[in-house]
Image (cartoon, rainbow, N blue to C red):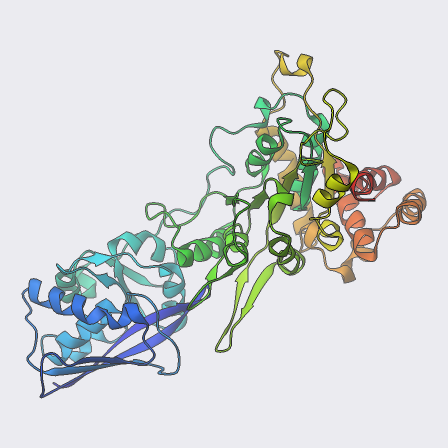
Length: 507
């Protein structure tokens, strides 16, 4: 047999697309090994890995010329995941594999020189693609078995070497598929991080509870050592556990980025990402050479993106956050493709009030001049501040609070209230921070006192239309935490309080 076909898949963004691997073998030199179909360097280098794998596994290598076409030919192919289907295609062209054995099968995996299989990125996305295209069997490296087995209605076969693949082809019923992992049921948040360890800061804890209940963005301003980072790292512990659908969405992003734990197969906790302020635009939003990869804002999808020392980030890097914060997704346009990554995150930012950190402190003297302070604060633009629902001050903790013996409220108790508030919001179809503008008037109705309070706040503080809507969403979250059906003046007043701190520093 001179021509043999196998199937594989390529990942673009967080979705996979079916790729046909056509292998043609004809009389010529064994050195002639040509791969066509817009392969990148990693795909072209596969010929050396495939040759060594076939020889070291005892299959030998034909003394003929080989041409491999990856179709469709107008789509760029990236990565070493095509090694396995190409090697199997060569074996088929050599007559070592019967054609019916590859019907209804998709193969993906990187080969080592001894014929072993190495893990690949995007196994979950490839499994979803295989199921959608009606393919029954998926062959992946053993390390990707747990990840791919998350997809129902698909027989996943995790194998460790090329020889094992050949043994299984056409005899699927004799080998049990990889068992699916359990659904994520672990408590949200990091182990050992609990709000009971935070002394004082009752107002900040309340603001964090409100933010968690409605998935609102939050900015903390305070001197060094006041506990801003400590508070932020405990926020994930009061968020509800991931739903199965959320876990699938987030796992796909982490799998494509190559940061997914191979043991778990599926994320069981909401992600908490805390990039350093030297991060590039592409590192934060996504991009890079070749096929764009997800950035930190997408890796934090359905979780928390924590930006510590916010003014230290380059201003142009912060400005690119405006679209994902508003739309919940990142769109990266190139000349040959446009990809979208999910980015529905809770942004939690922390900063000092000035470069030395002690502007407004009642104990330590600030050494910064007014122009220096304004230049420092000016790195945070008004449009970006407008997209952050809650602005709170985190003052230094007093000595008596630090030395108090009693434990503060545990994260579990706060999480119970947050989960109750979110259950109320699910009946509306959206978390409050994501409530569309067209539904605000319907779901955030105010009583007469609330209308007067909001009108006074808008006139005195000069709130924009976007800030007006965010105050209403925030007030609705506060009402949900209180179990109130109507949004009252008390709820509006607390929401307005969370929007007033930027007037202290930025005006």
